[in-house]
Image (cartoon, rainbow, N blue to C red; front, side):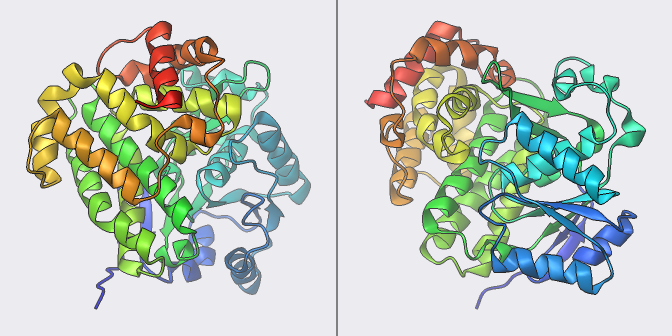
Length: 387
């Protein structure tokens, strides 16, 4: 019989975890002083029963929520601007960010922008640009993840695509960290197997790249290793049986762990995935899953020293990069992940463009070795063609 533990923890924010915890949504709002939230989600979740139920819980508690769902899978500035308009029209005093990474990111970006006079791009994660914001005007956020992937519920940033450059920009402020997270695995039960796999491998890539990022951060390394251990056991179960609550709970925890770990850094997988997603509107987690082994091969020498411990955590017979790479390839295949970007309808004809975007992406700074635009373009071309 499955054993699912409910509980609260306080790292890096208040997390209320366990089946049925969505029943405490109104309590979470009250804890943050939110009486009139803007409920931000994506268009795909707007009409689902779990969204209606969450809104009904707020209404029953006397909390007047307004729904905003004009959110794309790869959010753009217009999604945030529309949310700011809806927030002001409702006279809102906080945000409930409900959904996968897109809904959570837009919800947090709306909370930032409702009190600012500068454009959102002025708060990109560059140096201390976050200090430009009026911190006192940032609205409180309750985050409710409905996928186990991005970990945005415990992050201090949002990813938004710039309409002119078509680059994914990371918008950062310490106060974007939600005040309360409701991590209820029952909300993820309805995820199709393919989405479960793509989002779950997104969480794995977060952990893997954070673990391989250069620098000294043993706390992030430890969290990343445990996140990968959880994912290797829980993701195949959640993929095979979407109603496996224990596996779903472990995946939600692992997704949050990945986002905590990657404060150490990400790397070339994300640099390419951001560029491909901004250019071709591909699913972020699925793109990461496809690109991972190609970047592992490119980084082989730089990550070799890290693989022995990871291989032991994954309980592999070998202890080198080849052993981990073989395992990654088998793990992806068992979860139905395509082998190439071509299978996602991504062509190779803009390789130079993708390479240039990837080299400029903030995630590139965390790659285990420096790579220029030509190197990223080469990895991209290989990921499109395979081999």
